[in-house]
Amino acid sequence: MALLDDIVIGDIVIGGNLMTGLVIGIGALIAWPLVSPIARPLAKSVVKGGLMAYRQVEEVFAGAIEGIGDIVTEAQQEIGAMKPAQSPGDSGGSPGSG
Image 1 (cartoon, helix red, strand yellow):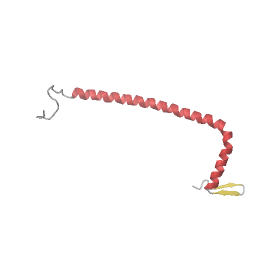
Image 2: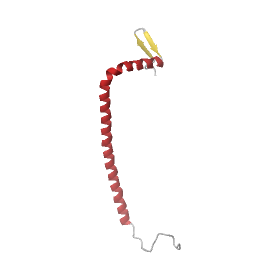
Image 3: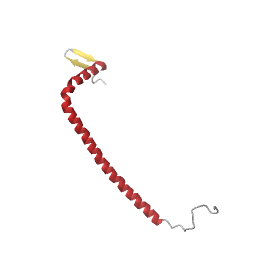
Image 4: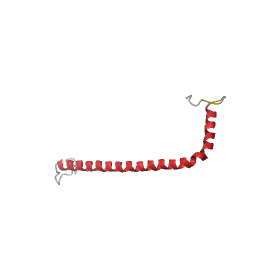
């Protein structure tokens, strides 16, 4: 990408990724003490919001799983009621084994 390949500051042209990286790094080191009192509480609230959203989704998911489990249980009970009852002497094995 040629977005940051050439940076012009006055008459000086800074080209290449190495110089761009150095300028951005030095700028970040200089700006961090000024930005950190604002950035830390902001980052903290973003993390809190993410945790709250995660908990909400977890609750919704648990409710959905419980509902699906109920449906599966009902279906199994209906299938059990529709199956013919086996006689007590029928063990389900092959005839002649024994």
